[in-house]
Length: 176
Image (tube, rainbow, N blue to C red):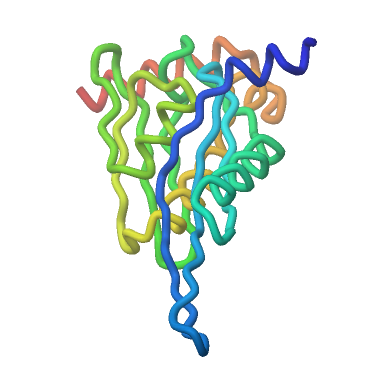
């Protein structure tokens, strides 16, 4: 029962459907590929890619793969990222920046779906290079997987969390 409750609270976003045709003796055979993003809107998100002869079956396969491949992303105040980060996959590059409260999600199609499923309320992002949805989603996940919270950074550097946060506040004040 607990597993079902967790499944019910997951949000699914269909990012892209691709139709491909195979020419055979009797005509064309169509196949479909689906790209789906799944998240709990509390810091966990995953994506999946499924292929089948029918659209609903491709979406089901992609959704199952997305649920299996979920990652946890640390969020600041439950609404934005702790720091700016870049990600890359093939020719697709993304830049993701944390934003002040009230900014909203400023991102293009595939990246927006990832942020909505993740539960990020304020973020600014830019896609550079490939506009292919698969590359954009993978580059976004590459960036999100490299996000760290201040506690982890402080432990690695042997400092206190307050020192790390103080340095961030000073950096924010100098950029204003």
